[in-house]
Image 1 (cartoon, rainbow, N blue to C red):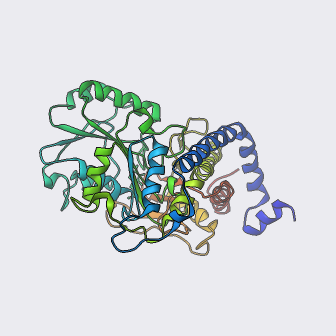
Image 2 (tube, rainbow, N blue to C red; image 1 turned 135 degrees about the vertical axis):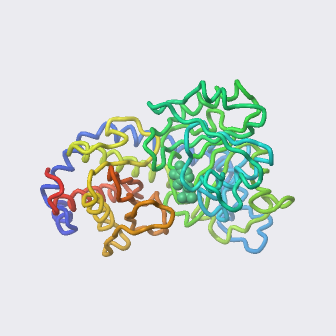
Length: 426
Ligand SMILES: *Cc1c(COP(=O)(O)O)cnc(C)c1O
């Protein structure tokens, strides 16, 4: 059978396939660059595993307190090697990216300290962690103050205001690498390095932490290669490679990691406890696959940008721009298009392809939200997923794809739904 025929059986018409195939052909050089980065990062991961003598004993499960969990301890050494840091925490009981960030912040800040974000408002869920929105148990309740310097209108760092904002009590600076679901640009690792160097010149003992969510393996270097004291992320995003069923990581300076560990478990216990419950294999294997999985997701993001740009929709980043994370925003301009797009992503999934996502009033949001995901791991956003608030400018945020071919199908199916409902013309 010709591949066009399988695509036809799965619901992609010849017209849509031909349009998308042309876009793909134009992206050949970019895809080659992405493959080269994946190859580089794959070697980095293998070297880190070899250097730490990963062996099958490390895949054994521990229970109870989890003392002497060799698999866990070695995995943490692998992460430390990979990120070129002194230590790391990589744990199933860091239950999400937000939790890992909370542990890193609350473990390293004390009453009277100030936290500074020199890159504008952090990710939504951190507002309650920090106390930007009042919340029980926030850092604010524990006497940690917060200051923020917004980016300049062009998305660059406001160095003058940052200089003014750093003072005696500034203890920790949090830098979010990815735009998340905001409209600002994502920072390159190089840019983050410049910002850290600037902060260090003003106050050398400032702890510089980077929220690394969605950024891992997109470039050849990571923020810890340019001076970050800690990087923090989620294992159901890039570094879990789609296999980690839960988890988060914090990699950085020994003192920072120790402090975080006393918050994660208990003062005095720290990193010595925390059973891995048989999850180590998925963590190792997911990390092993992460560079190529991230490359697939990146290709999907660029492919989507190429297609929707060609159809005249605003896309961020543009299809020819450099990438520093795996998130793609497409402004579709109407609720009907946003809904059709998300229904297409869902219809292309290996899991739950038969359900139709609809907008709903999610707690904490000021407009109905639609989410599409047919994931093996609930909420995993390294798997192909899309979500959008149903409000102007009707932008959809889309990310992930465990393989490039699945990402490709998802995006073609999103377009197919738009075409079927006469919401765009090829
Ligand atoms: C996803 C994300 C988080 C939070 O991670 P969760 O696992 O959803 O809690 C924090 N910061 C950024 C930039 C993210 O993309």
